[in-house]
Length: 214
Image (cartoon, rainbow, N blue to C red; front, side, top):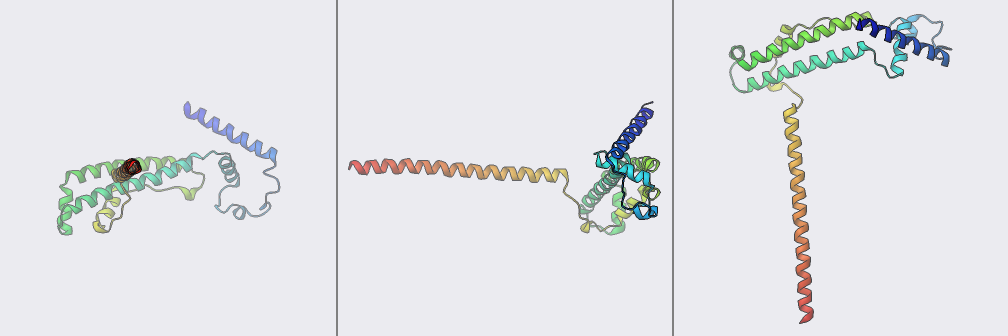
C-alpha cells in the first residue's frame, strides 16, 4: 500500500514538474529537435525518460536509482577497505611464507570474523543491486552481483606491505586529539610567556621607582 502511494506521489510530482516546464517553454526550440534520438541523447536513453530525469535533477530531486547506485559504490568500497585493513594488520603480525600465512589466516579468529562480516556486507550490496536493476531506466546501467569469494581471493593475493589504505576513524581521532593537545600546549606556552612578561614589567617598574627615589 505504501509503495503504491509512493509511486503515485512520484508520478504526480513528475507530471507537475513536466507541466511547469512546459508552461515555461522548456520543451520549445530544443536544439537537437528533428535529429536522430541518439544524437540528442548521448546516453541512448529514451528521450522522455532522459528529459524527466533532467527536470527532476534541475528541481533538486535525485532519482532513487542514482541514490542506490551511489550507495552500492560506497558500500562495496567500504567493505573492501575493511577487509584489507584486517588482512594487512594480521599479516604484519607474522613474517611467514605465503602458504604459511594462508594457513595462519584460516585459523585466525579475527580473520574469520572479518570474512563473516564481509560476506554479509556483499550480500547487502547484492540486494541493492537487485533494487537498482528493477528501477534503473537504462539497460546498460544495470549491474551484476559481486562474488564474495572472488573478492576475498583478490585481497588475499595482495602483498600486505603494498596495500595503501585511508586512515581509519581511530587514526583520524588520534590525529585530531594530537592536534588539540599541540594547540593546548602552544596556548599554555603563550600564556606562560605572557605571565612572565607581566611579571617582568612589574619588576622593571618597581626597579625604576626604586632608582627614582635614590
